[in-house]
View 1 (cartoon, rainbow, N blue to C red):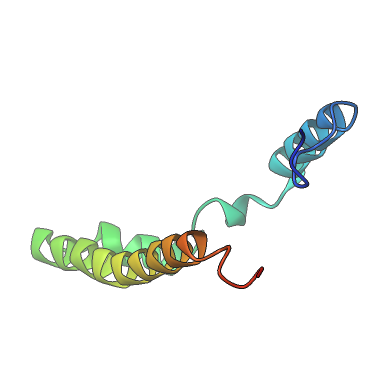
View 2 (view 1 turned 30 degrees about the horizontal axis):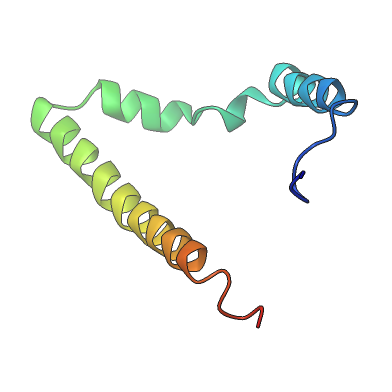
Length: 84
């Protein structure tokens, strides 16, 4: 029995081709920040500032990621509660 979300075999090459085209021809700024001012400031800074920048990145990245994972796990565990 096939899942409703499974991609049919005949469409898989099309989906892979579209994903490859998006990755090849998408804007390169999507992959990394291209701000020259930020790069210049970070390159000219001291080791203490760079460590603070790394800590700030972790502080801004980890809590939203944990919240997203928690919500995903919660919804996955309770996915069948509302079907009855």
